[in-house]
Length: 177
Image 1 (cartoon, rainbow, N blue to C red):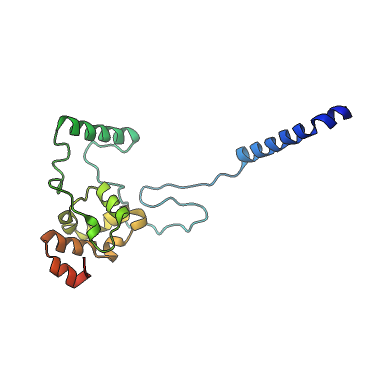
Image 2: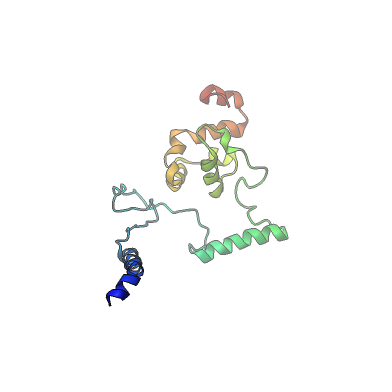
């Protein structure tokens, strides 16, 4: 037996190390994350977010539109097939006609915020300029890491100047473009 141990001791140590690592990975404490519809994920080490006055939908939904993976897949398929067959899939959305504006011209709007606005259907300055204060709050809550930017950087006011083509007024109020 001691000859067997003398020959195979490295293999036994490697097997024990693999067993310990595997046991740790299987039985380690998992991080608990609580997901809600109106706020960012809440982890145990984070302070609980302040309760919202009213639940904010993740995005605007049309009648009959679901919220699952199948609904998103169906929406994506309709977008692609609409482009292939030339159907006006999103022609009823306000601001969907014409070339999208460069939202990054506004102060405080970088590529990621512009992309987040595009994902929510805001492609033109006039769409942002016509937002009501309630819609601004709702949209602001949906922007995640950019929460508060629409009001702090006065994006609606900037969009109003740019939608009207008033570059001089914009530069007097917000600085050079």
